Image 1 (cartoon, one colour):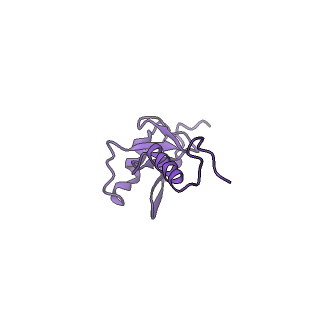
Image 2 (tube, helix red, strand yellow):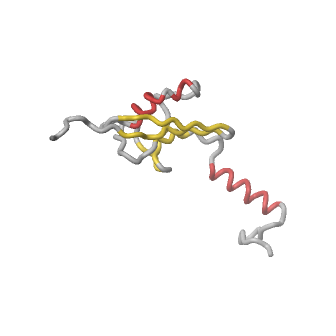
Image 3 (spheres, one colour):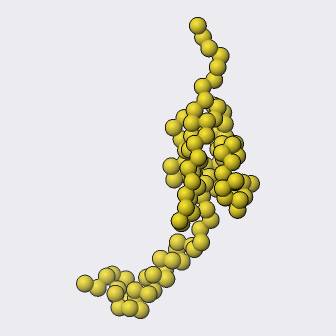
Length: 112
């Protein structure tokens, strides 16, 4: 006997702040997009500051498009905006090390 039923599968919707995180499992049907799963999770009830129209989403640390279709075994990660540009942070850290004499001012190598 062949069944015409489509098997739903579970995905986790994940959002993390520095001191709080939330993982919401959601059952979805094949063909569900990342953003549809986020909406279905109602994560906005827990984090009203989330703008679902402009959020960045990912799956296992890889950015995805909101309208990409979910596959079994995937998860939905909601990314926060960066509070500092990583290049600026590294540059400032290197300048501080130079000023403190922890690296060679010409070559940038560590002083042993």
